[in-house]
Image (cartoon, rainbow, N blue to C red):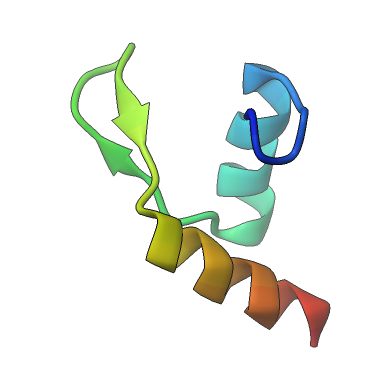
Length: 46
């Protein structure tokens, strides 16, 4: 959220619609590895 200056709702939408890779620890704790995020971002640019 900090990197892109977006809210949690936007992140969830990206996960559902665009396959944002996310590690779900619980319903309240979710993480994204920086390498996975950058790879996902590069794929979205294509």
